[in-house]
Length: 403
Ligand SMILES: Cc1cc2nc3c(=O)[nH]c(=O)nc-3n(C[C@H](O)[C@H](O)[C@H](O)COP(=O)(O)O)c2cc1C
Image (cartoon, rainbow, N blue to C red; front, top):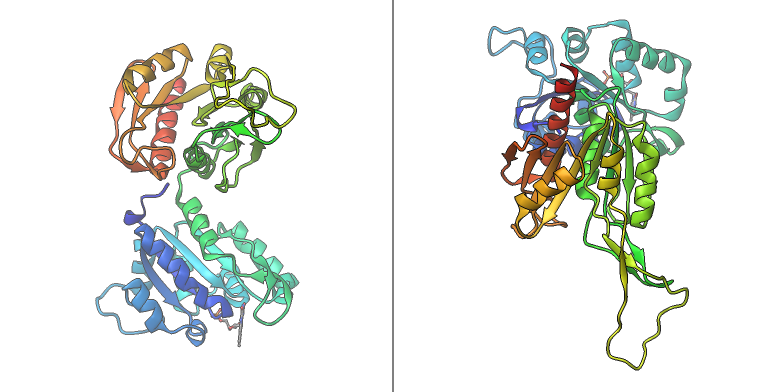
């Protein structure tokens, strides 16, 4: 996760029909807390007004490289120095060609030459232009020069053609910028994350489950992926959409969860277990729908499910294992007990009774307890921030293991 309020994003808008879509990207970046400055090409001005962009960004729009400067700074150098990333969106075939050949005939191409930080290009054009051998050569060329290039989407284009060339959704561009700015400190590591609830069938139509939303596991999987890890996400049923990972495994019961974790355990470096598995299951599952009987009550016998974390903890060799303790009472004592019993490297404890720390919340209030007993308490944070703190702690442990 990025600390957006410290980020300065320089956006280059070029003369394509998708230029209007950049307004949504700017709004996403600003909502996240980033500062946006914009350079427009002369062509871009034909598609969207500088006034719109200036109003949205609350910053002067830069267009002409020979305009008289307000200060004695050289504008293209100063713009390049301020930026944490340069994002050219949408990028025309023309501008991509210029970037590939190192031309510097307008402010945007000059800044791109002077800029040494991470650069993202978001192409958008008619399918024939995108498939043209010259464009293919130029796109490959700028990749070799160090630009990250997003693949355009397919669909109905402004010209009426259907095919590849559409600008990706602003939310996807936002994610690509987030990815570009994230430090890749988990490269070469395989991280297995569990998420969501398990469910246990009672009969062919009914099941028992819990309120776990899977959001915590999803945030961790996303953070680990952004930081360069190969991520296996093992998820129970939740209506929330999982992030993009290297392998997604869907499970239902706690038994299936254990099987899936076991299958991936040997080859993983880190196992993080925020899933909420059911501790018990019915001793028998009726093969027919249980009918409403004459009695007012219905009794069932439950048997314990395997303890996934404890089973893996007993098998642990080189893996870093992280557990979670969502408790309603004696939170830290219970969490400490679990940490030892399950042979974890650290445990993330949270008190479900506190406001902002529940299953369905988008926030959490955690204490991280390490194997050596050290406790670190955190203030209320978004689940994304919690994910970042968990990955930071893992990086620390990997560092310690190396030294
Ligand atoms: C209506 C219209 C729509 C255009 N849309 C695109 C487009 O989506 N992608 C593209 O690469 N070029 C498009 N062009 C062509 C560019 O505007 C042209 O190549 C221009 O020179 C680009 O300049 P720039 O890269 O400096 O902004 C379009 C032109 C017109 C007239």
